[in-house]
Image (cartoon, rainbow, N blue to C red; front, side, top):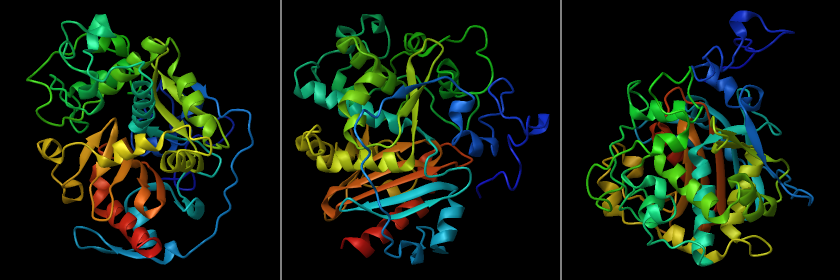
Length: 400
């Protein structure tokens, strides 16, 4: 269940008492339940850089309730839950729905709120995947090029004989143990290099993300199976910046964010070298980004062909080799840093991030759903047995 200041009093007072302080220096910002506060207040404790929303007026979203909060769901484990129970049992911080471009549901729990930004974790990879698709269409990037063509420093690493397409679709075989539940996992060394994990970087570990990438070795042949590995995201973002000679936050602003009608700037956290890592935004602006992807925007800034390619998805057979141990993801695939849910009546594209961040785009049913979370455990799919039935209940109510 979400922890709020009413429950605990994190960061309350002028100044807060020592036992209620949350900070990177204390190393408690990523502990639970402190992270429930951190995810909605990251800019107070960590360096960030803005993704400008642009000079135009925000696109107005007027809430038109249609009764979604009266829905009940049956989880994939057979539990019957009211809507409020479903929100609370999944540690939901915010949940909102656009149907045919209209805001039909919005709620906030815990520390989240309408005008508060929230970490979206690696949902930000879908920004990069979309920009990369644009650059491929323009001829700036070649999806079949080997990675050292763009980043020579990655010769003699896992990516030496990998193509850009394999990186975008997470088809890279690397020696990288990504288990958030294991404190000795490589993912924690990666997070420390990115300034995203508590504590100082131990002597002998990489000082920043690009340095970390140069240490990752190949395991088996690429292209044989889907393998979700966070370092692929950084390889892609470094390529985008190197080729365009532009900062990622400026590319995302110019290509995407300023075309969404956002109310607020989004932002990236930065690693010790100042490079963009994970991102944050408001829930409504997350929805607006999803609507831009669904429609292409009024100016056609996102070519509809890009969404068509994404939603068509990758190879479910390669995805199945990842052996996700939950029925909710059976038959899925992955394409260009988006998760693809293959389903009857038309596929959906999802941006997903640790601890429950999610953006769900269902073009066939004209739906965009955004969710913020602060789950105790990092893997986002752990809540899918409840979250996917929630999405399906909304779809059945509105669109089918």
